[in-house]
Length: 297
Image (tube, rainbow, N blue to C red):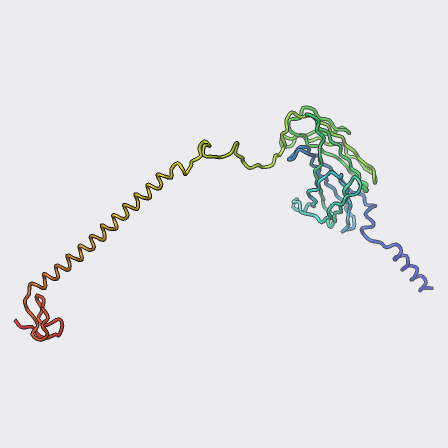
């Protein structure tokens, strides 16, 4: 009997395997806050999704999210204890119909984030955008915040915002916090009009010349104009160096010739010769400089 029960239980495990990833479809997210930043650092919509799982969730686990097919995923991160955002483990998006799906590995019960860019619709000075939360997970606390772009003269969002605040000179509109059921879509439509193409945080750009640089450009110094003077200066320098060299050589030769004459004159002042070897003696010599014999006289 016991063998039969054991075989039956093992059969159940083989037929219906259990795993942590298989249970993620039933996960309810504790909170989700979507931030929409139109024309922030690009002429498109920057979408930032922050979410947390419930406090007692068993970890690690994989969560699958979807973003529109025309979106460009740029970051997946989690927040550490100091508040810094670090890269999280995730799988690259895979296209499926009108969506891209990707997995995030949740290892700690902290805030997680993913960011992507999505195109805006331009019509003259008007811009429109439709955001859609279309995930498999239910959410206990769901809200959307919209950052007002630069130079806006008209702004509206549907559902309408419930709060409007200014932070660091920028206006932020926040929707009502709602509960979203599993696989229940949430849509927010945004429309605004602005008088310029200015971005909130334009990217740093290198300074480019207004026109081609050539010899006629104002303030530009051409070496060709000064080349004759440079060559002439080097030529004059070579002449001066050569003159100084020959002058120093001449002085050295004169000193040597003068010293030689002095020696000859000194030797000619005495007529004494060594009686042994015949070498001329110099003034004051008492012995021969060649053989050492005593001089007479």
